[in-house]
Length: 266
Length: 220
Image (cartoon, rainbow over all chains, first blue to last red; front, side):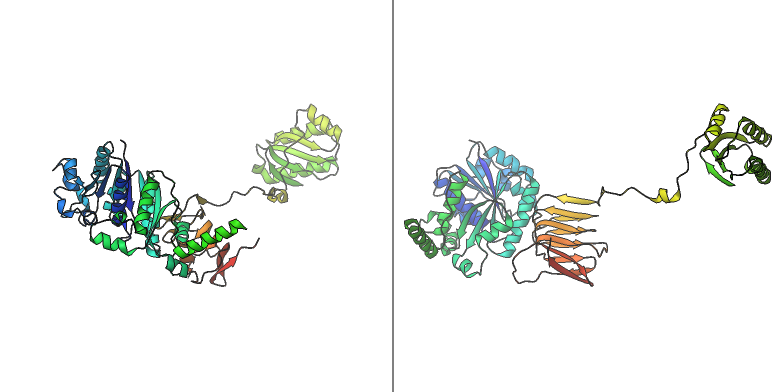
């Protein structure tokens, strides 16, 4: 196997990096892929909580890097999928505990063993972000349809481009079709227009994300959730499948389909 | 009598008169000026006066006595030219150009231009360009990006970041873009922002008019 390393980042905090990491990890695992998720937010770890694996942590990323344990010992197996693992961040240390070169070395060790390494980057553009970016083959930039988050995404994309290693793709998270329609929220095309990088997914705002996060059950496990489907679609696009973007506004979608039906018939 | 320095030595233009008078005037001048002519090479411009070998030989000797060498004779008379050539004198000199001719430069059709840098990429938030000269961007300038130029700024794309043209005080600097909506626009010491209302984007050029920054739609 020759695993691909995907770094999930955003610049701004709270836009959904960790949620995206957990859901993509689970989605890829549900598609039969071997996946390792790594939380690089040392000192502010979250991914373990969102994935519901907090109580299984014995060793963490810093232990693995410092040689306190073998790499496999720091890999926590998921409760639902045996082909999904988590390397949690250390909670009692800070970002300076590891260096970008450590991450490159660690990922090179993982690549032959897995299909995907999904790295959850901390917010910001400092050491933690550099650690997460260093080993990336591909970067997913998460943004919300909101000006400050788009601004930070732009900054991050600039830094990723300056690094000249991995291409950046865009995930627009928490879009509210109703608000977009009323002109109260940036539309996906406004965001893509400004950021000018390929769009790999649009995730609608969905209450079930919050509920499932609190239960450590990523939303992708919920068949009825639109957000869950959106994450699953992103995972399939990562695997090279050509999955069309979801029609987000149901009514508009129906009308458009009806319109197409009529125009097609005439 | 006119005396002028030329490349070959001293050009003496003799008035057209009886050769005897001209010769006397010349010798008188040499005596009068003394050291000025000492060791000099002379070229005569004798105009239409026809001079034979005798006349030239004589003046040659007279000059020699004053430590002056006859180098050449310019004449409109073919006879005089021939005689001078036979005596080994030059009959042509590089005439000094007239002043008016010197000042007349060839018409300049090649512009050398002014220093500028060309940036073929989108400037994202946090990126900065600072340059002594003009700045040309082919791409967008996003909010949070910054351009500082001592000259003008041209953006072939959307300008939404901060831009400062004429940063060292050049009031003639301009800023133009296909979509001119900068967060902040400065020219020299003037400063302005983009009005909030959304207008249809069109190419515009901003400059200082009557002490204020004015943006006008681009007219061909």
